[in-house]
Amino acid sequence: MPITPFQAFRLSSSEYEVLRVVEDKVDAFIAENYYPGLTVTVNLPAKTVTDRILHTIIQRYAESGWSVKRTENDDEEQITIDFSPNRPELT
Image 1: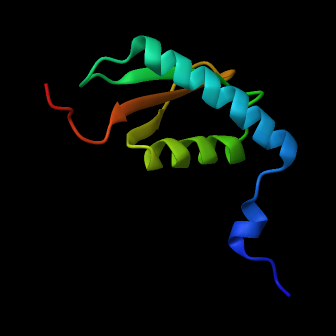
Image 2 (image 1 turned 90 degrees about the vertical axis):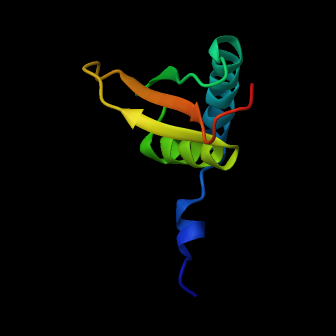
């Protein structure tokens, strides 16, 4: 039986461990630096965060209510991601 796209993209256990560590660091950084209405820019290590992990991070944060955009930078060792709320928060 052919593999489904979901099965083909499933992260390995070691990738999930990296994802967990990266999400913990992103969460802590956002919690420390976010103010309603602002965009928080987070840098991630390119050696650790593979395309598969990055895709999963973007998808999971988008599902959690964030608008997530990868931005270009000159540093090949860093991946830059902007996090902003999907909708403005009431003040």
